[in-house]
Image (tube, rainbow, N blue to C red):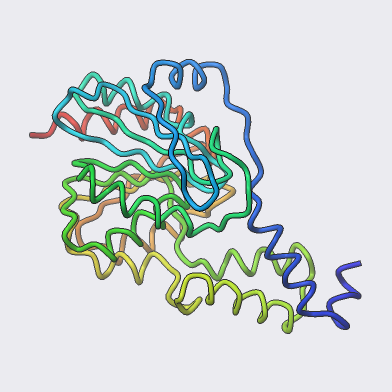
Length: 270
C-alpha cells in the first residue's frame, strides 16, 4: 500500500514512517538482567509526560560510572558489566530512556535521550561512561554541547557512524521514493535542529577535546551496525583505540567474557 500511496500523499507517508521510527520495540530482559535491576536503588522522575526510571548501585562509592543504552535497549542490558564496576568501587548510574525498559511508553526519537543525559551528566560528572549502540551518539551529542564536562574514560560498545545510513535502510525497507525520503529527512532535521549530513559520529567526535581516553569495542560480525562505521569513528577520534572482536552479536557482545576482560583491564590502569 505504501508503494502506491507515496506518489499521491508523500507527506502523509513520511509522517507514518516517522511515527514508526518514533516507537521503539521493547526487548524482553533475560533472567540475570532482571536480577541485577532488583539490586538497584530506583527513582522515577518526570520528563515531558514520561515517567522515567533511574537506577543506582553503591551510591557511597566515590567514582561514578554512567551507563547509556542504545535504541530499543535498556539498563538491564549492562547486567554483566555492573558487577565488574562495583568490584572496582564505582558508583553505577543508568536511566531507561523514554519508551524504553521500565520507563513509560510514548512517542520519542533517537536523539531525545541526549536532552535528558545532558542534565544528569552535568549533575553527576561521571568519571566513566559506557555506551552501547546508538547510545554512543547521544553521549557524543552531550559532550559536544557541554565542553565543561571532562571525562576520563569512555567505553563505546559498538557505535554507528552516519545517521543517513539509517534513513537509507528505512527507505529501502519500505521502498520509499525520493519525495517521501526528502520529507522524512526534513522532519528529522527540524527535530534536532541540525543537517542530516552533520548527524554522524565522525563530525561529533572530531570536535571533542573533553575526553581523555576512548575505547571502541565492536564485533566484525555485527549485523546491526557494520564494523566499518566504528572504524571510521576511531579514525576521527584522536583519543580513541578500537578493539575488534570475533563472532559476537550486536547485543550478545554485552554479555561476552571478552568485553568483561577488556573492562577489567581498563579499570586496573591507574
